[in-house]
Image (cartoon, rainbow, N blue to C red; front, side, top):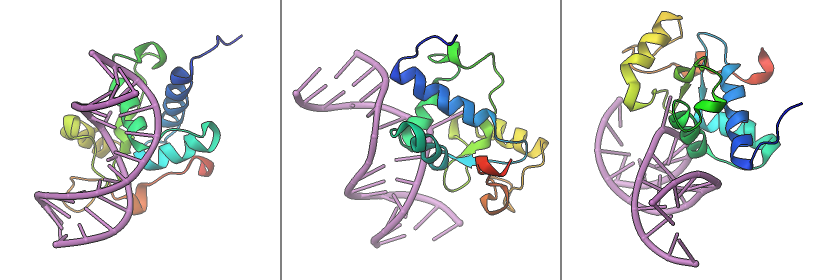
Length: 119
DNA sequence: ACATTGACTAATT
DNA sequence: TAATTAGCCAATG
């Protein structure tokens, strides 16, 4: 059976599980991820989601299940990927055909945004 | 306890 | 459209 998780681990797990479900060529915003998670855990905000993804490679590596985390599908409210890995994220998004703005520097959220209940 | 920090956001200019 | 500002929530030291 599943091991007991601390509150922090529970939150991290919820975020990672949701992000893993984002289909290729689609995207979610930090705020949207935070809302969905908060529906069940009743805590956290956009900045917490950012903190989880920022630490998914080190601090939370033990919960990140290897490296299969499509972190580039989570962008800010303006559609921009994290500044630290901007080009890498944009390359990945372009590669899977995610709708981008005309200048190709951000996701066209009007077309690409994904909600968990729409498969 | 308190201050700082951040892969955020919405409103304002 | 881009820069600034104030609010936000929880982790960290």
